[in-house]
Length: 192
Length: 245
Image 1 (cartoon, each protein chain N blue to C red):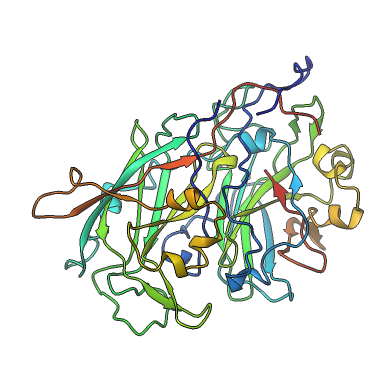
Image 2: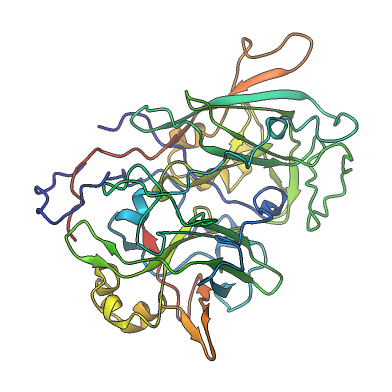
């Protein structure tokens, strides 16, 4: 039973760069780790303009679909060398961010199904009074994506597609994931 | 609180985190102009809490030095302003302490100026104050910072707009669901009634939970005023099965 009332959220404001960027924030694994992938994208507003004062954070399973966390009922598993699971990157003048990581594994879901490989994403920015949450899925996981309960719950394919990164032509280790906070093909955001 | 069917044999039993209702500000809040082009227009999609959501980064060790919690000793000299101690506990809504969690803070200096290139407020920078700190909560969930009281400052949201003095707080918690970024305010600030960010929180009682409390017992004689502020993150309702949707 819950007792204490929650502390409300407030915007991260325009000055997050004073404290929140970490030198190693974007590198969930060192860039030279075998199998490392890079996810790049831009954070855009309702007019399609870049948002230069945001922060993108990612959290994900390791390549085996495991977490170094006691609340995973399968047991906490030590991460692959140098893998933190968590990424954090401020957006630049062009709204751009990048995260270097390993591809997450698929996960068992509480309903007995399978969740396709994905990263959870938190977006923080001036003008956002609370964080917004989205997910990154992979374009070359068509079968897993088709069986994913979260993607399947989205009836409109155009909405669903906002959650699937695009592959970089020519480099299978690079993916693009733009985040549109509002309008146009607005990214799907979650009540988590 | 929901009742859940017993989990099927193939299911995972996961913590189920309280979903806040009526606590956080609505994303689309007309008084705060920057929301106009940044607040999503589509309704949020309900995300069942799976493994990715009930886990999270347990970081901090090696990322925080003891000196990071004292914002008054980061430079050759002492910053100008009213020296203060800000301390409190990080708890979940079940009243459980959240130990070893990373707390990051940032703030304006005593004149109301941030050490940031986009802050053009014509108030002096303080060469002895950067305005950023971090610490890990202890076994009882307690954090403690030494800093100076930040000044109020003007912003361009509307004519004669001023932000009440505040310190920004960022918390990771223990699960992705618990992530919180917020602002702590000081008691009795005359600017509360005029601030669209503070007032974006619909419930006045919830707003008041962002205001720290002066505490004479935390105040160190001949040294610094003490303020206490507890932070409550979402609790988990135990090992119930996530409702199928």
